[in-house]
Amino acid sequence: MDSIFYVLVFLTSFFIGSLPISYWYGKIFKDIDLLQIGTKSVGSANLSVFAGKKASFFVAVLDFGLKGIIPLSVLGLLGFEEWVQIISGLLIVCGHNWSLFIKFKGGRGILTSLGIILTIGLWVELLLICILAGLIGRGLIYKDSGFWTFIGFFLLVVFVLIFNPDKHFVVFSSILILMLIVKRLIANTRLLPGANIYRTLAYRLIFDRDVRSRSNWISGQSRNSNT
Image 1 (cartoon, helix red, strand yellow):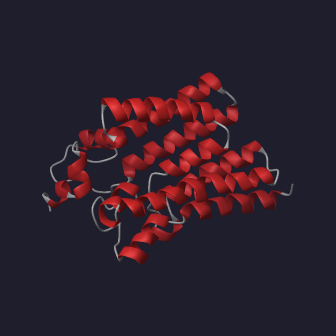
Image 2 (cartoon, one colour):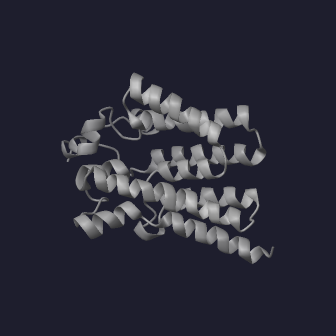
């Protein structure tokens, strides 16, 4: 296949990932700018606070299916190689995290990543993650989505090495968690006044926020109290 087709596929993948569905939903249907309120994130948690759980669920389905499942399924039906599908999946997540449409800001790509993981055939790994990090971890041990998301992506790498150590999948899972780490660390460009930089970076890495309290972070109370 001519290399121009690969280039077009990769550019299209990044473009699809860049579609800021939650941001546009807030703008069009609720007249809100998610980048200016709450956590100043276009993630589902921020959307849920200001647009409601139904809106958040609707956007989540689109991120999971429209971005995560459909594009790679189409590539598979068209006969593109596995490595093309994997690179396209990573570019979709990259576009979601650093969107062309909102000055290279974006979400964390969690639901989109889950759709991609499912589509490329890592079903066992995804099932184990859902059970261990989702049902047992968040459901029974410690109810913090940010923490268990980090654990879940770490487990993805471990489970791929155990159950499916194909080099394409190992590279895919490693780059996926690397993008998550980078996004968490640099998503917020400013530190809270008086905050310790090392503690803040640790909170960002582990909990995906600048403070220990999830409720304060989502409501914006931590930032508002320091402005």
